[in-house]
Length: 252
Ligand code: GLP
Image 1 (spheres, rainbow, N blue to C red):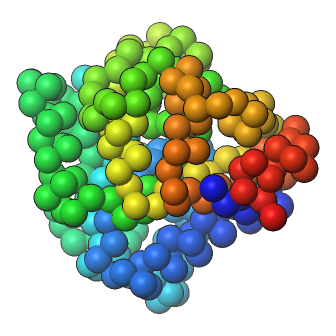
Image 2 (cartoon, helix red, strand yellow):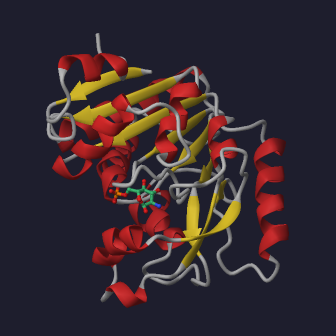
């Protein structure tokens, strides 16, 4: 793991965008794994600015998103399809049909999950996976206790995740009970992983990530088994970590 310390949310977002742009410069047909949530919106904003100023193009790139709520229409304002369209895709130049998300409305969910995994493989796998981290250590929607072997699958959201995501809905009851997510195995297959964390709310989980052995109880710890993980975290998210704990996460 390599840890890059950012001053604040803005700085984290700028550094993350620069990281992604460097990867696209090296491989214009990059297969990006994308995430939703508050952590990554600043990165998308920066990528959009850089696209507009001609610094980056997504013409030859493609993307696969981590997750989507079950039973939510693509047009629903709370769907991740809508989030991605509004916050990123419609502002940049991906070719039509190159942005993939799990289908929360699939009739046969099992089959749709297998198809998503098959499609990722057909594209040659993900080159760079962008990740946020849940306060309980979830990545994508892989909640604590998820087996590391899982590929794309349907999950039941924990009360803490529902509570954390309730801010996007009118009320906590409106947050769907279930979601489709790339599994841990799908995420680990990515050639490189970029994990972002910002704010005091993420300080405890980053500390745990440094301290704990790899355990299914804290899904993000599995990243310690991957050979190419970069973490960009801001000062607040790192505020509870000692020098030694930062070193464990790859700070020099
Ligand atoms: C959400 C998403 C994750 C995201 C995480 C953190 O539930 N499914 O993909 O990384 O939780 O969200 P945020 O960035 O809003 O803190």
